[in-house]
Image: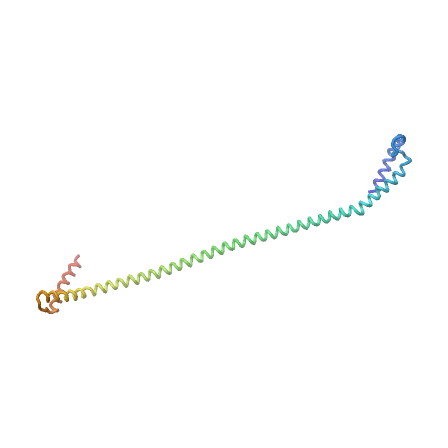
Length: 195
């Protein structure tokens, strides 16, 4: 690069040599007798500037650019890893939510089925108990119906005997009263069955 600059300056000087001669009375920089010293100082200044830039400043800038580039690359890779991890975590989260929903639905269905089974079992037990109670009550009613005429007849005989004893003042034979009560009961049963 320094060579190109020096070459361009020399070329520029030769091309403008005629103009430089014309300006001897003007600017001293354009006077050809000072050109060698100017080229020396130009070469020295630009050479040291080139060395300073190429050895000290540009490597630091290059190192900084490389460090920034590697940092940016690392940041991009870290961001990509974190994005992949967050996608995986999001997928895991959604999977866990779906699993929890399915499990809750299964638990609900199982609980519902169990409750329905319990209700049906209790309903069957209750119906069985009710049927047993109804059968027991019907049996008691039938037993009462069977026993009631006899008890009524017995009470009627005893009551009649007491009444007759109080009215007549003498005791009557229970078998006679019993025959009369049975006869009346049979007539009343015939009327009841006729209705």
